[in-house]
Length: 441
Image 1 (tube, helix red, strand yellow):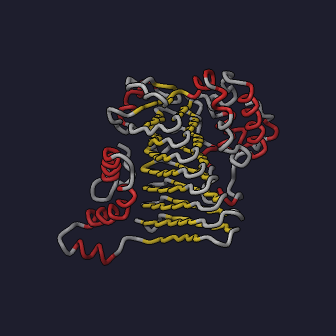
Image 2 (tube, one colour):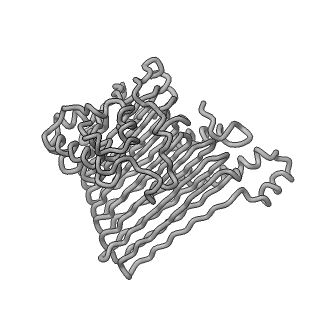
Image 3 (cartoon, helix red, strand yellow):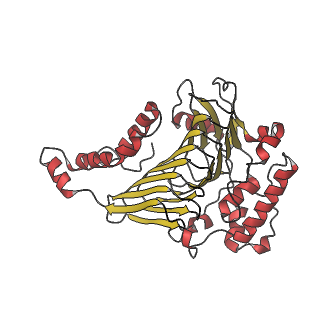
């Protein structure tokens, strides 16, 4: 990376030295992309890596980044195993897979007319004009170090474009799988034209110690109706930083669910702009963590115009010494009258050593709105446990049943029956009474 290293802290300099490929981003692309990368490099130099003195990072320490070396290559011998351990795709799924940042061609059928699902680098060569208005415009590099890092150095990525009026019944499955001590910067750009509809599954999985700094940008034009699901089943030594930025036009509808079933340090940032009247979004989250895992979700929903609606429902199940963070901001602009916003965060602690930091926030600058937020924190109901034990159910099985009941509402709303079954089966292997909560199979 052509950043003057004297501008960076020793922490950031050491970090960049151990991240593979950051100092030599691909030269392929139009002139506007080169300018975008240069600006991102400048922003990274100005921001440096975040530290605990910053309010947004005080519960998410990065000290482990001082010690990990992510510069080694991926293990090609484990590529087939990584693909086999990923979420099975249905026969009609449109699939795009990357293993250790390298595109892996799929034998599945090509997308139908009006739908493009392909490599981002190819799109930058063939359809650069289509991408210029949105790539790097939604996910700002000015305030987020890892977004700046990704923008400056991304090589692999996906481009999804659905034409106006196309309602895609087949799901799109984007797989990002890691097999070794790699560093990857996946980039996803989704352009949903007027009145289009689709479901996108974004999967992140892997083994070993690796760094994954991903950025997803989603532009929904008027009356588009999209589902987005991010599933993370990663190793306990992984470091994952994800920024998803979404902008909705008039009448657009967006639902996104974040499911974290395992990992090491996970930081998911979700920014949504309701920029058109009668637009709506629903953000859901299911986080299951144990061991020393840290899972941090920062969400920001900005209601910019009148007659918009948002819903947030996040649930955490934390065991052993796991730590969870939920910071949800709902911003209502001055002219955004008739806003309807609901935010709810419920948390279940299975251990006295587990820790949850929840910070629901409202910023309201309009006077004709209906906004609410709430958070709960507790342990398993002792009366319910006693009731089950009294009927001959052992302690671990009773705990497992209550945890399942707590998370089932979120699972039941996920798209695709086969996907719901996979999440349930994965969760069952990690619940007390069946296997350690964070067991990596």
